Image (tube, rainbow, N blue to C red; front, side, top):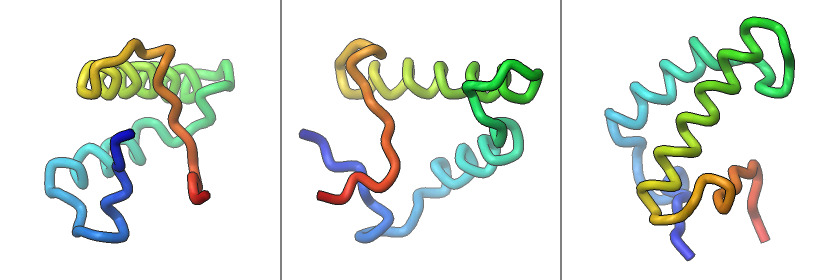
Length: 71
């Protein structure tokens, strides 16, 4: 299983930092909501899921984003 928790082992890559800052500005709303900002956040989340799935070689529906995945 790929390990993507670089926060505890390495500084954030500048490209990742720019993407994160853009997402914080544009996709701050709850993607489950139906108001405009929520729909925008859903589009950004779906695009991120597509890109991440392609990068790791799986289907988007096989990819799970989770917070605090400590075991």
